[in-house]
Length: 218
Image (tube, rainbow, N blue to C red; front, top):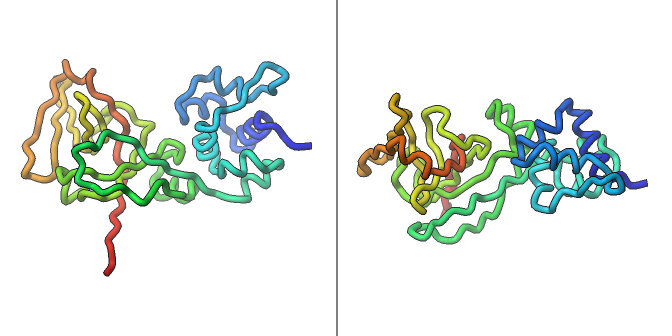
């Protein structure tokens, strides 16, 4: 008899010693939502929506197809160790970039966590650097990987954020008075101070963790 999604989620949580709260926090839903996913439909539960299957699968380090199609959780865990990293959709109306031929990346969560300790594959998204303000650190057109589990400037670093209907990839430095210094590594751009009173208008999408450059070979 085929196992339900609720059974698979419960078994994966038990096998990996993770809690419902861990899953809820990682993919940005309420604890109540995960509780409903873990209950059978005839007991008042609910199925995850399709757009949540990828982050759920990434949280467990399995493929979405395996989570949906396979019956045995052991088979799910051993069948594949893959997670899909999707693109962040930003307003890039002023971008000089051509449309990207890359729609997503497939990574191995277990190896990703070894390379970048503490990072959850379910929280990783990517965006293309759409201007030259961070050159040479991040050049225009580079693929920038972002930890979307970080939604506040918790430490100095490079962040992807929006403000006043504009998108930015900038280095942010915290100031003791609560303001932020927005720094472009390209020295042709002047630093800019974001007063503490205007931080509420910022939406931090995530913190940059690494970037990838693709070079065309003739």
